[in-house]
Amino acid sequence: MFHFDSCNAVIIGGLLLITGIGFAADKPNIILIYTDDQGYGDCSLLNPEAKFQTPNIDRIGREGIVFTDGHSSDTVCTPSRYALLTGRYSWRTRLKKGVINSSAKPLVSNGRATLATLLKRNGYHTAMVGKWHLGMEFQENGKKIADGPVNKGFDYFFGIPASMNYGYCAWYENETATIPPILYTKKKRNSLVRIDSRAYRITPPYGTTPKEGNMKVAADFEDVLVLERFAQKAIAWIDKVHDDERPFFLYFPMTSPHKPVIPQERFRGKSNAGAYGDFMVETDHWVGEIIQTLERHGVYQDTLIIFSSDNGPENTWKKRIERFQHDSSGIYRGGKRDIYEGGHRVPFLISWPKGIASGRRYDGPVNQVDVYATLAEIVGDRAGQHEAEDSISFAPVLRKEHFARAPMIHHSSQGGFAIRAGDWKLVMGVGSAAAASEQGSMELYHIGDDPAEVMNVIDQHPEVAERLKDQITEIILKGRTRKGLEASNDTPVEMWWRK
Image (cartoon, rainbow, N blue to C red):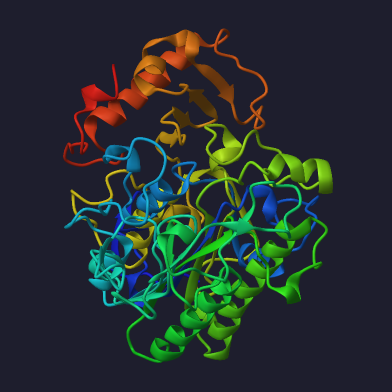
């Protein structure tokens, strides 16, 4: 049952209509669980042929809504995280392709609203536990950080700066390394992953000089402990704030199943998909621990849980098909870094026992960039004109109302663009300026009839391609997707886009 406030009743034609409906009278706790490189097919609820089970992740979908056409805003880590937290596409910033390293200038600019600042101003405790990968400043040789999560709206932070193959590997709490990263390491061979010759580990022994590796690491850091350490800190924070009168928001970005693929020993052999499958089993376990914590404190019914992934699966998904007959992309084409569906169509599950009916499925397109506007509507916040420019609230879906998403833009790690409007998807190739001006380089798919993107029908529907090209150009030039004052991109648009 929904809890509405700020409602106005009007009578039109003898019918009582409720306008201005919101959810803020009973603000839920909010937990946003974000996995790393988990493909659509790596969730047993979405993939009947999966070679492992994810019962705790599945529970979120079974007790809520499965968004079968849910997307990350990009096909690699940093830009997807930026869009999720800000409600704005990352390609509007200086980052036009790829990711940033751990010590890069922060991508979230000072003054840019985030989910944390949104919810904090609406009375929430806010915390982030997990992987940041949006840039931060390192001080005192990595002993301290600045301009990190606690400067972007989070009351509390525990985690690591970026993926474990970047820069500093140490546990940071708020702005300080619990043990300074004064040792050195290089990637070590990961013997657990036999299908990937480049699989690696970040594990002792560590050296004392740069000759022994190009990565800085703390003495107590070990890859196999990361998921458990994150879960322990997240649970401890929930234990601390759950009985406060204020609701809480936890952003929980995990590091799995991204490399290094290193399940704890107790999870090894628990799947039929090698170490990767075992790592997903462990991932699911820690999701279950978070849910059990909510139940233990009696707040599960009042908590909205969002579960998704930052992009499709790493390219080892191809070898998993050969070796284990497990397809991490499901029926979809491509994987991480690809502009095709496998690169950005990801698990997207939402539950809220007191707020939304369970056991539902929604087959229309939604995007992680939309989480901002959706949560703003749920808590009764009218996001400012200069916030979350690309975020479209899908709260109507939660209320079982009609929802038609405005055209959304997909983006590949190499800088390629695609636009999705309804069932139509126009793929514009790598290099937006060239692709946007040369129809010969474009591909058109009808996702409703051809979700696997097998049939390029641009020759049969050139008028659709032209319409979509005009729509993407308008969204890019206006600096926003949703209605509001015209905004600007952070870099001159003529340098990376041609009409």
